[in-house]
Image (tube, rainbow, N blue to C red; front, side):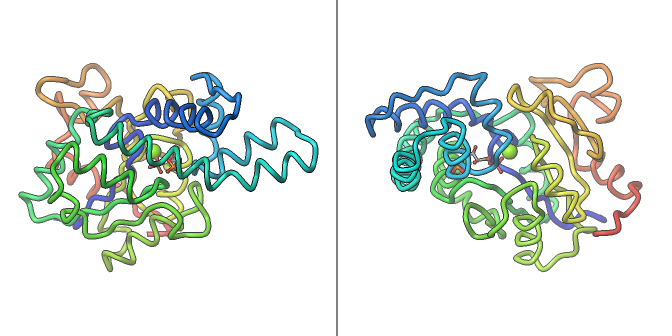
Length: 258
Ligand code: XBP
Ligand code: MG
């Protein structure tokens, strides 16, 4: 097989988690006595910034507070984000975000075929552990040889750093791997790292510009959640199989960064 490893983004790709993130942010604001409440529309806009801490800073800037008040709020970012992460992980551990269609199946196919697995995510390892543990079982953490996430890199998506880090951990060239993403920041990051990239948007990212994606599908599909129309044509059936992905990857032009 030309594919040696699959590298998954987490939020929006493995599971549609952003609504749980949004609610956890709002719960954290209450805990810290802040009269902020991010609506879905507002959060969709804020998601253009990768990273929860960075998103909070952008939001505080947008409030244009007095310098002293701004400094006070900026000093609270770590604290607020810590509370958000605790609340989020608790809700996810209770099954707050089910896997997207096809994720468990394709990961199973990849493991059965001896492919290696990696993660390249902006969120923290605690959040990823909560999700993987709740949806696959605690031992599944070890399925992912490369766990590149959170603040391990200076530049977050759309910079390529987190994917470059995952490739380094796998000791594989980009040409031997496939990335899975849900957002334009993620797509840009994976492409800048030279990766063949499959994009499955969510309600939070469906308006993003996904030109440059190697494969764009509504989801990976499953027998109980079959792809239809153009998606089924691209996937070569009602769900994307590893064999079909191998075919598409092998036929794809190699990017300069690969
Ligand atoms: C998406 C993000 C994250 C989450 C919130 O991550 O940008 O910031 O929205 O998680 P991914 P944190 O790369 O997995 O799609 O608050 O932990 O950053
Ligand atoms: Mg994502």
